[in-house]
Image (cartoon, rainbow, N blue to C red; front, side, top):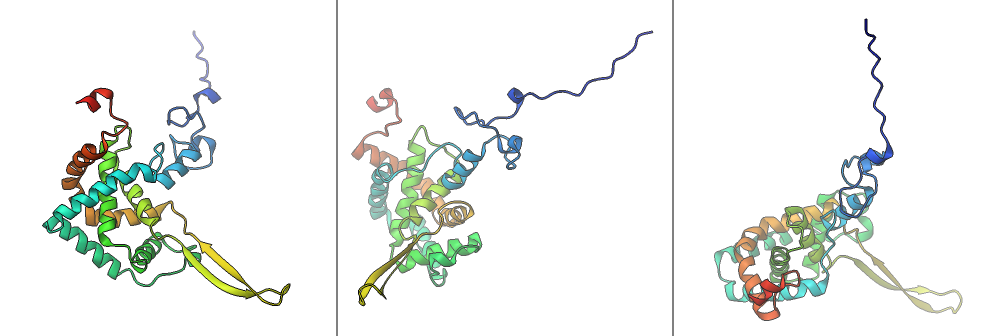
Length: 246
């Protein structure tokens, strides 16, 4: 008569624990480490996605964006009377008109993402940022992401990148006043510069509003913007030498 041994519980070694799937990272995933719910990404890359819209791709810098935004502005000048552009333009105008009053950046702590996104659009309106400029930024970013072979071509990355670029145009509260100086008996200038946090759900809310107004236009315009940008500034650096030669 054979005696069956009781099955032993499987042992888990540290080598079998889930690590971050971003190439080259090697950190433990949030859930494995017990510090979050992400099963396949570490805390660093979860926060990276919150700020940039991608676990691994960083925010585009101004020199990378500039050729595409300039080209998008040229494209808009040639197509400003087309229905698709007019639709995007007036949707954004309506959004700005209904954004309400500007709330100082130091008052936004603890407010909802929807409220903070609304204030961001109110701040753009108060700063007299042209609606055409907002559309050009969205078109330029859509074209750059499509043209960059190394980009992260997801909806979230696109809307977050658009939101960050637009948010930078008028993001802070700046105050100046004179204060009494007890050492001299006179006054001295005081400055206050407060900037709202540029990450998290508020960027998604801003990006969603931009997407609703501009995405249909971007689908039609992006290929033409890419072609015009390539003709004027050359192929994107991510393109292979063969692609550049052709």
